[in-house]
Image 1: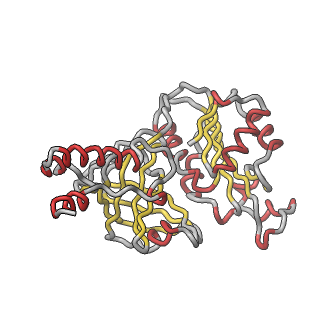
Image 2: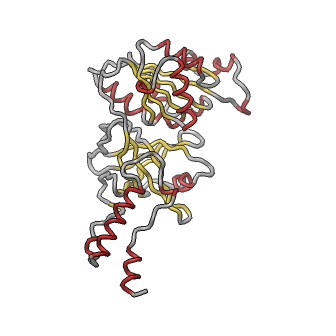
Image 3: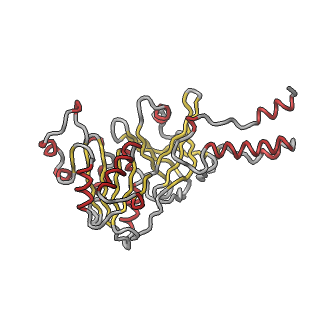
Length: 316
């Protein structure tokens, strides 16, 4: 092989590994970016002109979010919310904003033991937040990305790209929204709720159902309690577990703070509870769903039973 051929092979884009795909349907996906860069490399090689590769960028330090390239952001605050869930705050220059649409997610890149990993997360900061953005992240003991995230401290620089996805929300388009969230599936719901409560002209009713293992594992309690004070916002909690995985007893709710006792259910969000919640809505709701794949499938099935079809649902 000639030296020239070796030089070109060294410049050839490397095909992503499965761990580099976050699995969230991003456009462009990491594989889309690879195909674009490969085509660029093939054109440059065919023309024997390496200057055609000069526009290729894998990351940026200009603090402007971009779906094609990773941008550096500095961690300004780390707050532990539960034993395995953290809220991270990132700096933005001056009074700049991420300019996200409601419910959009961004993709984080990490490297663990030489393996690049990418995962998608939805910022929970208000859409109009200036100078910062915040992300809610649950860390898993065996998770590759979690190993990387747990090392973060104030001042560290991490790389994000995006935004992607999102829910095309329009004020007053739907008489009522029913939000079904499991764990960190709460994240895309928060900016939508804040957008509604910040807009005096938006009279959309909202019923949020948050599903968590225990009371202690409910995220963002103060924020949720503040949102629940608005005339058009209702928030219910469904708690599925107790210590030692024993079933809840009727008296368990009595141990909760009084402000939670009337709006908390025990067990799981099943078909019967779904009927109760949907029937309590003031109007036939449009439904937003976010959780694990199993949770999303279960919710869609229960909703169909109570007469809410797919065209009245949006799954993040």
